[in-house]
Length: 199
Length: 225
Image (tube, rainbow over all chains, first blue to last red; front, side, top):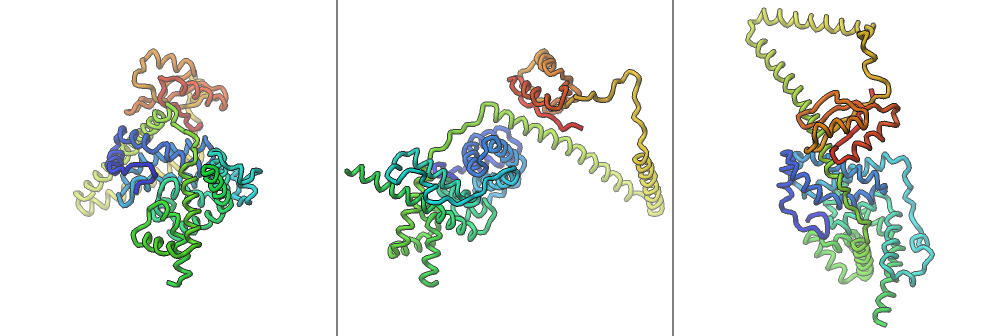
Protein backbone atom coordinates (compact mmCIF):
# COMPACT_ATOMS: atom_id res chain seq x y z
CA UNK A 1 0.00 0.00 0.00
CA UNK A 2 1.33 3.35 -0.96
CA UNK A 3 0.39 6.34 1.17
CA UNK A 4 -2.19 8.33 -0.72
CA UNK A 5 -5.54 7.13 -1.98
CA UNK A 6 -4.95 8.40 -5.49
CA UNK A 7 -1.32 7.40 -5.74
CA UNK A 8 -0.44 4.65 -8.13
CA UNK A 9 1.69 1.84 -6.77
CA UNK A 10 5.14 3.30 -7.11
CA UNK A 11 7.29 0.25 -7.74
CA UNK A 12 10.21 2.41 -8.80
CA UNK A 13 10.46 4.26 -5.49
CA UNK A 14 13.00 1.96 -3.78
CA UNK A 15 15.20 2.40 -6.87
CA UNK A 16 14.64 6.16 -6.66
CA UNK A 17 15.77 6.18 -3.04
CA UNK A 18 18.81 4.06 -3.93
CA UNK A 19 19.76 6.66 -6.53
CA UNK A 20 19.26 9.48 -4.02
CA UNK A 21 21.56 7.59 -1.63
CA UNK A 22 24.10 7.56 -4.46
CA UNK A 23 23.76 11.39 -4.56
CA UNK A 24 21.82 11.51 -7.82
CA UNK A 25 20.39 15.05 -7.98
CA UNK A 26 17.93 14.14 -10.75
CA UNK A 27 16.41 11.37 -8.63
CA UNK A 28 16.11 13.81 -5.73
CA UNK A 29 14.27 16.28 -7.96
CA UNK A 30 11.88 13.53 -9.05
CA UNK A 31 11.23 12.58 -5.44
CA UNK A 32 10.59 16.22 -4.54
CA UNK A 33 8.14 16.67 -7.39
CA UNK A 34 6.35 13.47 -6.38
CA UNK A 35 6.09 14.18 -2.66
CA UNK A 36 6.23 17.96 -2.09
CA UNK A 37 2.50 18.57 -2.31
CA UNK A 38 1.50 15.51 -0.28
CA UNK A 39 4.02 16.30 2.43
CA UNK A 40 2.97 19.94 2.47
CA UNK A 41 -0.66 18.95 2.91
CA UNK A 42 0.19 16.60 5.77
CA UNK A 43 2.57 19.04 7.47
CA UNK A 44 0.20 21.99 7.12
CA UNK A 45 -2.48 20.06 9.03
CA UNK A 46 0.02 19.28 11.76
CA UNK A 47 1.78 22.61 12.07
CA UNK A 48 -0.85 25.15 10.97
CA UNK A 49 1.66 27.86 10.09
CA UNK A 50 2.23 28.37 6.37
CA UNK A 51 5.76 29.74 6.72
CA UNK A 52 6.91 27.08 9.15
CA UNK A 53 5.30 24.35 7.04
CA UNK A 54 7.46 25.25 4.04
CA UNK A 55 10.59 25.34 6.21
CA UNK A 56 9.80 21.94 7.67
CA UNK A 57 9.11 20.55 4.20
CA UNK A 58 12.60 21.62 3.12
CA UNK A 59 14.02 20.03 6.28
CA UNK A 60 12.25 16.77 5.50
CA UNK A 61 13.67 16.72 1.97
CA UNK A 62 17.18 17.44 3.25
CA UNK A 63 16.89 14.60 5.78
CA UNK A 64 15.85 12.33 2.92
CA UNK A 65 18.91 13.44 0.95
CA UNK A 66 21.24 12.83 3.88
CA UNK A 67 19.79 9.55 5.14
CA UNK A 68 18.51 7.82 2.00
CA UNK A 69 21.23 5.20 2.48
CA UNK A 70 19.56 4.22 5.75
CA UNK A 71 16.31 3.24 4.03
CA UNK A 72 16.35 -0.55 4.42
CA UNK A 73 13.35 -1.52 2.33
CA UNK A 74 11.37 -3.12 5.17
CA UNK A 75 8.56 -0.59 4.71
CA UNK A 76 7.14 1.36 1.82
CA UNK A 77 9.14 4.38 0.75
CA UNK A 78 6.11 6.56 1.40
CA UNK A 79 5.80 5.21 4.95
CA UNK A 80 9.47 5.95 5.57
CA UNK A 81 9.13 9.48 4.17
CA UNK A 82 5.96 10.25 6.12
CA UNK A 83 7.70 8.95 9.25
CA UNK A 84 10.40 11.58 8.76
CA UNK A 85 7.75 14.23 8.13
CA UNK A 86 5.84 13.25 11.25
CA UNK A 87 8.96 13.43 13.39
CA UNK A 88 9.85 16.85 11.96
CA UNK A 89 6.29 18.10 12.52
CA UNK A 90 6.48 17.03 16.16
CA UNK A 91 9.70 19.00 16.64
CA UNK A 92 8.29 22.03 14.84
CA UNK A 93 5.21 22.02 17.02
CA UNK A 94 7.38 21.85 20.10
CA UNK A 95 9.25 24.93 18.83
CA UNK A 96 6.17 26.98 18.16
CA UNK A 97 6.00 29.63 20.82
CA UNK A 98 2.29 29.65 21.21
CA UNK A 99 0.27 26.62 20.50
CA UNK A 100 -3.49 26.69 20.66
CA UNK A 101 -4.68 24.15 23.17
CA UNK A 102 -6.73 21.40 21.68
CA UNK A 103 -10.10 21.98 23.27
CA UNK A 104 -13.00 19.75 22.38
CA UNK A 105 -15.74 21.68 20.65
CA UNK A 106 -19.34 21.33 21.64
CA UNK A 107 -21.94 20.43 19.05
CA UNK A 108 -22.97 24.08 18.80
CA UNK A 109 -19.39 25.23 18.25
CA UNK A 110 -18.83 22.70 15.49
CA UNK A 111 -22.10 23.44 13.76
CA UNK A 112 -21.80 27.21 14.25
CA UNK A 113 -24.97 29.28 14.13
CA UNK A 114 -26.55 27.31 11.33
CA UNK A 115 -29.01 24.51 11.84
CA UNK A 116 -28.45 21.22 10.06
CA UNK A 117 -30.97 22.27 7.43
CA UNK A 118 -28.59 24.98 6.22
CA UNK A 119 -25.64 22.67 5.78
CA UNK A 120 -25.91 21.65 2.18
CA UNK A 121 -23.07 23.45 0.44
CA UNK A 122 -19.77 21.74 -0.20
CA UNK A 123 -17.89 24.68 1.29
CA UNK A 124 -19.98 24.52 4.43
CA UNK A 125 -19.12 20.86 4.91
CA UNK A 126 -15.45 21.63 4.42
CA UNK A 127 -15.64 24.42 6.95
CA UNK A 128 -17.30 22.12 9.47
CA UNK A 129 -14.68 19.47 8.84
CA UNK A 130 -11.85 21.95 9.30
CA UNK A 131 -13.34 23.04 12.61
CA UNK A 132 -13.88 19.46 13.66
CA UNK A 133 -10.31 18.45 12.85
CA UNK A 134 -9.00 21.54 14.58
CA UNK A 135 -10.73 20.34 17.73
CA UNK A 136 -8.60 17.19 17.77
CA UNK A 137 -5.19 16.89 19.33
CA UNK A 138 -2.37 16.88 16.73
CA UNK A 139 -1.80 13.17 17.39
CA UNK A 140 -5.46 12.32 16.82
CA UNK A 141 -5.56 14.53 13.72
CA UNK A 142 -2.54 12.72 12.30
CA UNK A 143 -4.24 9.34 12.70
CA UNK A 144 -7.47 10.57 11.06
CA UNK A 145 -5.60 12.22 8.18
CA UNK A 146 -3.29 9.27 7.56
CA UNK A 147 -6.22 6.85 7.63
CA UNK A 148 -8.83 8.60 5.55
CA UNK A 149 -6.79 11.01 3.47
CA UNK A 150 -3.61 9.05 2.84
CA UNK A 151 -5.05 5.55 3.04
CA UNK A 152 -2.60 4.10 5.57
CA UNK A 153 -3.13 0.87 7.47
CA UNK A 154 -2.98 1.08 11.26
CA UNK A 155 0.35 -0.77 11.18
CA UNK A 156 1.81 1.86 8.84
CA UNK A 157 0.50 4.68 11.03
CA UNK A 158 2.16 3.01 14.02
CA UNK A 159 5.43 2.97 12.09
CA UNK A 160 5.09 6.57 10.89
CA UNK A 161 4.21 7.94 14.32
CA UNK A 162 6.52 5.53 16.16
CA UNK A 163 3.77 4.46 18.53
CA UNK A 164 2.31 1.04 19.38
CA UNK A 165 -0.56 -0.21 17.25
CA UNK A 166 -2.92 -0.08 20.22
CA UNK A 167 -2.12 3.60 20.72
CA UNK A 168 -3.06 4.27 17.10
CA UNK A 169 -6.39 2.51 17.59
CA UNK A 170 -7.04 4.37 20.84
CA UNK A 171 -6.29 7.74 19.24
CA UNK A 172 -8.67 6.97 16.41
CA UNK A 173 -11.33 5.86 18.88
CA UNK A 174 -11.11 9.14 20.81
CA UNK A 175 -10.97 11.18 17.59
CA UNK A 176 -14.19 9.56 16.40
CA UNK A 177 -15.88 10.35 19.70
CA UNK A 178 -14.77 13.96 19.44
CA UNK A 179 -16.00 14.20 15.88
CA UNK A 180 -19.39 12.71 16.80
CA UNK A 181 -21.20 16.10 16.67
CA UNK A 182 -19.68 16.77 13.27
CA UNK A 183 -20.76 13.36 11.99
CA UNK A 184 -24.28 13.92 13.28
CA UNK A 185 -24.42 17.29 11.50
CA UNK A 186 -23.04 15.80 8.31
CA UNK A 187 -25.42 12.84 8.49
CA UNK A 188 -28.41 15.15 8.82
CA UNK A 189 -27.10 17.36 6.04
CA UNK A 190 -26.63 14.42 3.70
CA UNK A 191 -30.03 13.00 4.64
CA UNK A 192 -31.70 16.31 3.88
CA UNK A 193 -29.73 16.70 0.68
CA UNK A 194 -30.82 13.27 -0.61
CA UNK A 195 -34.43 13.99 0.38
CA UNK A 196 -34.29 17.20 -1.67
CA UNK A 197 -32.92 15.25 -4.64
CA UNK A 198 -35.72 12.67 -4.37
CA UNK A 199 -38.36 15.37 -3.91
CA UNK B 1 -12.98 -13.81 23.06
CA UNK B 2 -16.25 -12.72 24.71
CA UNK B 3 -18.99 -11.03 22.70
CA UNK B 4 -18.17 -7.65 24.29
CA UNK B 5 -14.47 -8.00 23.46
CA UNK B 6 -15.29 -8.96 19.88
CA UNK B 7 -17.63 -5.97 19.59
CA UNK B 8 -14.96 -3.60 20.88
CA UNK B 9 -12.28 -5.16 18.68
CA UNK B 10 -14.41 -4.75 15.56
CA UNK B 11 -15.44 -1.20 16.48
CA UNK B 12 -11.75 -0.24 16.68
CA UNK B 13 -11.03 -1.70 13.26
CA UNK B 14 -13.89 0.00 11.40
CA UNK B 15 -11.87 3.00 10.08
CA UNK B 16 -9.38 0.65 8.41
CA UNK B 17 -12.20 -1.59 7.17
CA UNK B 18 -13.50 1.54 5.44
CA UNK B 19 -10.14 2.46 3.88
CA UNK B 20 -9.56 -1.11 2.72
CA UNK B 21 -6.25 -1.77 4.44
CA UNK B 22 -7.22 -4.56 6.85
CA UNK B 23 -5.65 -7.97 6.45
CA UNK B 24 -7.87 -10.89 5.40
CA UNK B 25 -8.45 -12.16 8.92
CA UNK B 26 -9.45 -8.80 10.39
CA UNK B 27 -11.60 -7.96 7.36
CA UNK B 28 -13.51 -11.25 7.58
CA UNK B 29 -14.07 -10.75 11.31
CA UNK B 30 -15.48 -7.26 10.74
CA UNK B 31 -17.70 -8.39 7.86
CA UNK B 32 -19.14 -11.22 9.93
CA UNK B 33 -19.74 -9.08 13.01
CA UNK B 34 -21.24 -6.11 11.19
CA UNK B 35 -23.79 -8.33 9.46
CA UNK B 36 -25.33 -9.17 12.83
CA UNK B 37 -24.62 -6.05 14.98
CA UNK B 38 -26.82 -3.00 14.43
CA UNK B 39 -24.62 -0.68 16.56
CA UNK B 40 -21.54 -1.54 14.48
CA UNK B 41 -23.47 -1.07 11.22
CA UNK B 42 -24.41 2.44 12.36
CA UNK B 43 -20.84 3.13 13.43
CA UNK B 44 -19.62 1.85 10.06
CA UNK B 45 -21.93 4.30 8.31
CA UNK B 46 -20.53 7.16 10.41
CA UNK B 47 -16.97 6.11 9.54
CA UNK B 48 -17.86 6.02 5.85
CA UNK B 49 -19.29 9.54 6.15
CA UNK B 50 -16.15 10.75 7.87
CA UNK B 51 -13.89 9.07 5.31
CA UNK B 52 -15.81 10.55 2.37
CA UNK B 53 -15.79 14.00 3.95
CA UNK B 54 -12.06 13.95 4.70
CA UNK B 55 -11.19 12.61 1.25
CA UNK B 56 -13.39 15.13 -0.56
CA UNK B 57 -12.41 18.16 1.50
CA UNK B 58 -11.04 20.95 -0.62
CA UNK B 59 -7.41 21.65 0.12
CA UNK B 60 -5.91 25.05 -0.21
CA UNK B 61 -3.99 24.56 -3.42
CA UNK B 62 -0.28 24.74 -2.75
CA UNK B 63 2.41 24.47 -5.34
CA UNK B 64 6.06 25.12 -4.61
CA UNK B 65 7.32 28.57 -5.63
CA UNK B 66 9.53 28.50 -8.73
CA UNK B 67 12.68 29.13 -6.73
CA UNK B 68 11.88 26.54 -4.04
CA UNK B 69 13.52 23.53 -5.68
CA UNK B 70 16.64 25.43 -6.88
CA UNK B 71 17.12 26.76 -3.34
CA UNK B 72 16.71 23.28 -1.92
CA UNK B 73 19.25 21.94 -4.39
CA UNK B 74 21.63 24.74 -3.45
CA UNK B 75 21.27 23.70 0.20
CA UNK B 76 22.09 20.17 -0.90
CA UNK B 77 25.27 21.48 -2.53
CA UNK B 78 26.23 23.22 0.72
CA UNK B 79 25.68 20.01 2.67
CA UNK B 80 27.79 18.08 0.20
CA UNK B 81 30.54 20.72 0.27
CA UNK B 82 30.64 20.56 4.06
CA UNK B 83 30.60 16.75 3.94
CA UNK B 84 33.50 16.71 1.47
CA UNK B 85 35.53 19.05 3.68
CA UNK B 86 34.94 16.86 6.75
CA UNK B 87 35.68 13.70 4.78
CA UNK B 88 39.00 15.28 3.70
CA UNK B 89 40.00 15.89 7.31
CA UNK B 90 38.95 12.41 8.34
CA UNK B 91 40.96 10.83 5.53
CA UNK B 92 44.09 12.85 6.46
CA UNK B 93 43.70 11.89 10.12
CA UNK B 94 43.20 8.23 9.20
CA UNK B 95 46.32 8.26 6.98
CA UNK B 96 48.38 9.87 9.75
CA UNK B 97 47.24 7.29 12.31
CA UNK B 98 47.96 4.43 9.91
CA UNK B 99 51.43 5.79 9.16
CA UNK B 100 52.23 6.18 12.85
CA UNK B 101 51.05 2.67 13.76
CA UNK B 102 53.03 1.27 10.83
CA UNK B 103 56.20 3.04 12.02
CA UNK B 104 55.48 1.92 15.58
CA UNK B 105 55.16 -1.75 14.60
CA UNK B 106 58.31 -1.75 12.45
CA UNK B 107 60.45 -0.23 15.22
CA UNK B 108 62.33 -2.66 17.57
CA UNK B 109 60.80 -3.05 21.05
CA UNK B 110 63.10 -0.91 23.30
CA UNK B 111 63.43 1.85 20.72
CA UNK B 112 59.65 1.79 20.16
CA UNK B 113 58.97 2.54 23.83
CA UNK B 114 61.64 5.21 23.81
CA UNK B 115 59.84 6.90 20.92
CA UNK B 116 56.52 6.51 22.72
CA UNK B 117 57.92 8.18 25.85
CA UNK B 118 59.33 11.05 23.76
CA UNK B 119 56.00 11.49 21.99
CA UNK B 120 54.16 11.56 25.32
CA UNK B 121 56.64 14.17 26.60
CA UNK B 122 56.13 16.23 23.45
CA UNK B 123 52.37 16.11 23.85
CA UNK B 124 52.77 17.21 27.47
CA UNK B 125 55.02 20.15 26.53
CA UNK B 126 52.72 21.27 23.72
CA UNK B 127 49.74 20.94 26.03
CA UNK B 128 51.45 23.05 28.69
CA UNK B 129 52.41 25.69 26.12
CA UNK B 130 48.84 25.82 24.89
CA UNK B 131 47.52 25.99 28.45
CA UNK B 132 49.74 28.92 29.38
CA UNK B 133 48.74 30.58 26.11
CA UNK B 134 45.11 30.34 27.14
CA UNK B 135 45.87 31.75 30.55
CA UNK B 136 47.60 34.82 29.11
CA UNK B 137 46.63 35.24 25.48
CA UNK B 138 48.99 37.50 23.58
CA UNK B 139 47.64 40.65 21.99
CA UNK B 140 46.87 40.05 18.33
CA UNK B 141 49.59 41.25 15.98
CA UNK B 142 48.50 43.98 13.60
CA UNK B 143 50.41 45.95 11.02
CA UNK B 144 50.16 49.73 10.98
CA UNK B 145 48.23 49.62 7.71
CA UNK B 146 45.66 47.22 9.02
CA UNK B 147 42.43 48.89 10.06
CA UNK B 148 41.12 45.86 11.93
CA UNK B 149 40.72 42.23 11.04
CA UNK B 150 37.05 42.58 10.36
CA UNK B 151 35.20 45.87 10.45
CA UNK B 152 32.22 46.15 12.72
CA UNK B 153 29.02 45.71 10.76
CA UNK B 154 30.48 43.32 8.22
CA UNK B 155 28.73 40.04 7.77
CA UNK B 156 29.60 36.93 5.86
CA UNK B 157 27.33 34.94 3.61
CA UNK B 158 27.53 31.86 1.43
CA UNK B 159 26.76 32.53 -2.21
CA UNK B 160 26.13 30.15 -5.08
CA UNK B 161 25.81 31.77 -8.49
CA UNK B 162 23.73 30.50 -11.40
CA UNK B 163 25.62 28.43 -13.96
CA UNK B 164 25.46 31.02 -16.75
CA UNK B 165 26.77 33.94 -14.66
CA UNK B 166 29.64 35.98 -16.06
CA UNK B 167 32.50 37.63 -14.25
CA UNK B 168 30.90 41.01 -15.03
CA UNK B 169 27.62 39.83 -13.45
CA UNK B 170 29.45 38.72 -10.31
CA UNK B 171 31.13 42.11 -9.94
CA UNK B 172 27.81 43.92 -10.46
CA UNK B 173 26.08 41.72 -7.86
CA UNK B 174 28.84 42.21 -5.30
CA UNK B 175 28.74 45.98 -5.86
CA UNK B 176 25.04 46.06 -5.01
CA UNK B 177 25.78 44.70 -1.51
CA UNK B 178 29.26 46.19 -1.11
CA UNK B 179 30.53 42.65 -1.02
CA UNK B 180 33.91 41.07 -1.55
CA UNK B 181 34.78 37.43 -2.01
CA UNK B 182 36.88 36.22 0.92
CA UNK B 183 36.85 32.50 0.16
CA UNK B 184 35.89 30.06 -2.54
CA UNK B 185 34.73 28.86 -4.83
CA UNK B 186 34.53 25.44 -3.22
CA UNK B 187 34.52 22.43 -5.55
CA UNK B 188 30.75 22.81 -5.64
CA UNK B 189 30.81 26.52 -6.41
CA UNK B 190 30.14 27.97 -2.96
CA UNK B 191 31.68 31.41 -2.32
CA UNK B 192 32.11 33.08 1.05
CA UNK B 193 31.39 36.78 0.67
CA UNK B 194 31.76 39.60 3.16
CA UNK B 195 29.00 42.16 2.74
CA UNK B 196 29.00 45.69 4.07
CA UNK B 197 25.87 45.64 6.16
CA UNK B 198 26.04 48.62 8.51
CA UNK B 199 23.91 47.00 11.19
CA UNK B 200 22.79 43.45 11.93
CA UNK B 201 19.25 44.21 10.77
CA UNK B 202 20.56 45.24 7.33
CA UNK B 203 21.99 41.80 6.60
CA UNK B 204 18.73 40.13 5.66
CA UNK B 205 17.60 42.96 3.31
CA UNK B 206 20.93 42.59 1.49
CA UNK B 207 20.52 38.84 1.39
CA UNK B 208 17.02 39.48 0.04
CA UNK B 209 18.48 41.59 -2.78
CA UNK B 210 20.77 38.72 -3.74
CA UNK B 211 18.07 36.06 -3.46
CA UNK B 212 15.74 38.03 -5.73
CA UNK B 213 18.35 38.09 -8.48
CA UNK B 214 17.96 35.21 -10.96
CA UNK B 215 21.74 34.95 -11.20
CA UNK B 216 21.93 33.81 -7.56
CA UNK B 217 21.02 30.22 -6.68
CA UNK B 218 21.66 30.53 -2.95
CA UNK B 219 22.40 33.32 -0.48
CA UNK B 220 22.60 32.26 3.16
CA UNK B 221 23.98 34.41 5.99
CA UNK B 222 26.63 32.85 8.19
CA UNK B 223 26.45 33.25 11.96
CA UNK B 224 28.27 36.35 13.25
CA UNK B 225 31.35 35.70 15.31
